[in-house]
Image (tube, rainbow, N blue to C red; front, side, top):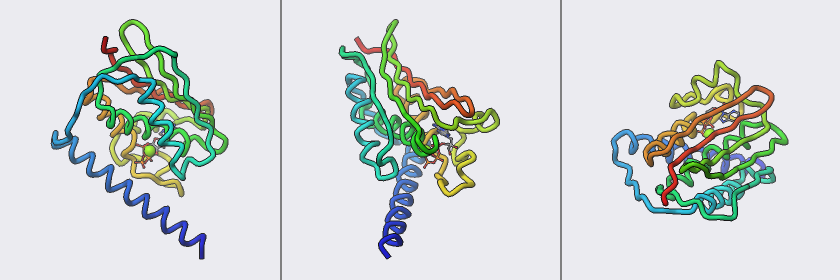
Length: 188
Ligand SMILES: Nc1ncnc2c1ncn2[C@@H]1O[C@H](COP(=O)(O)OP(=O)(O)OP(=O)(O)O)[C@@H](O)[C@H]1O
Ligand SMILES: [Mg+2]
């Protein structure tokens, strides 16, 4: 009975996430998403995202570490939207990486740019799927498994980052892991 209740709650939160993501996609497409740019410390934004991810029941007990320099890295972004993009890719690393995956969020700066890398040592994405992961509703191999998602998290993350003037790229090797790199110009 309790297990059934847990499953119903899990499904309900999955539906809620899908509705949130669909709303976001429509707002982005209609250019109706308010973007509030402020100068923030990238370390601080990454730390907020990691804390939120670790509080997600799907991620409970996973290994997610955060590395960054002691100094501030100012970037002009919409804090809420960057947190959302980082949460999407960090959650992906845990959910799709496979059992025992280690996830590292690394913030670095150099030559006027700030780079936030979310890397994992999980199962990776094979070349055929890599071409499609930014297609909305794709969902990759997992779309056919019991971990089925809506296939919106990664396209949304890239669109949000681009909306703020940054870029988001993926590098992945099957069996070795995946790295998502997000880059912005530094603000000062
Ligand atoms: N770190 C990763 N390791 C392995 N596969 C990944 C990783 N990140 C993304 N993927 C693959 O890319 C697909 C697309 O990711 P995306 O976040 O867009 O969708 P999703 O996670 O399936 O669903 P949701 O919309 O709920 O996020 C995933 O289904 C998965 O197959
Ligand atoms: Mg996802």
